[in-house]
Image (cartoon, rainbow, N blue to C red; front, side, top):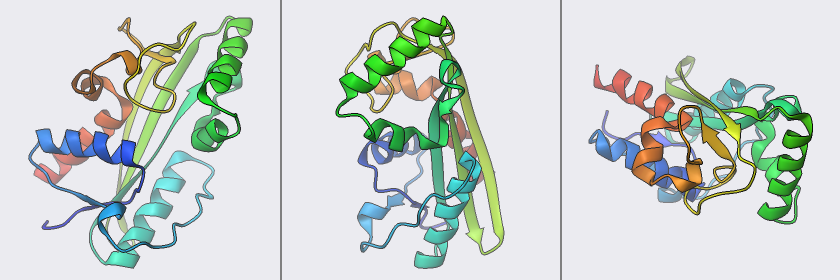
Length: 193
């Protein structure tokens, strides 16, 4: 497979994914490397639906094998929300500080700190032919935002078996345990076989 398109223009995701691929000596291109296109709306009800929408759209537009992910955090105290709406939920608040304050208050009022991050990757090889790869990591919400690395909800999420939030981990450390790296590594293993 000569070219492989990651259907995203989210620079944080692109950097994270390219680092994971680099370890495995795989090269990818992203939407930032191609002419601008209209991005399809994520109208799915589940992570897998949104990943499929993006992957199929990218394949149709550029006629090259395309993969897309949909990821999010599901917080027990919020009835597993924000889930597929993680990005939009984040954008409802004036800033990260207000969002984190809201989540921490809800979580610690309910006394249920459990949460999980999930990533679904859809890989479209040709029309009507796609594969799904999933990565999921369980954890808890921190009492306070901690760390400066990563992005999104990383300062709040402590993966099970660790004391650090994702944002306190180095990129290398996070990429050995994160939901995204789990899904990507399953995908890379498939490509290698």
